Image 1 (tube, rainbow, N blue to C red):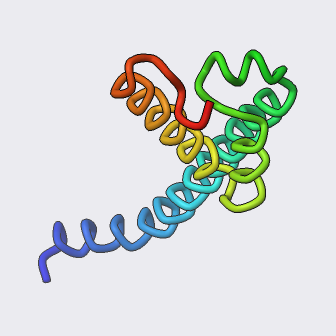
Image 2: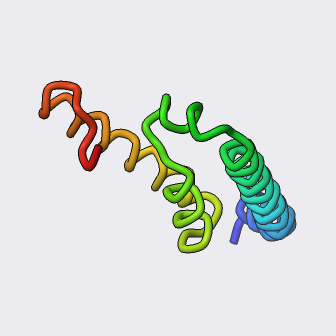
Length: 100
């Protein structure tokens, strides 16, 4: 091994653990941030009136059901899908909401 290869190997061996630790720390921070954002969104949705929820295509039971069944991050995605599907169905039926 040449001196340059030895130095490169030594630098890689030293910097790699720091890079792994940094990547893990960034991942943990990102997941924590996402969790708190989703938790805050679910709290805001649960504080809305039934009229406000209906205005965005949701019902109180949608929020309650998804909160109990899905992890926080997936709960907001599930509610978006419910609202989107309800809006799509309403448009197909000429503006009448299904079940109303």
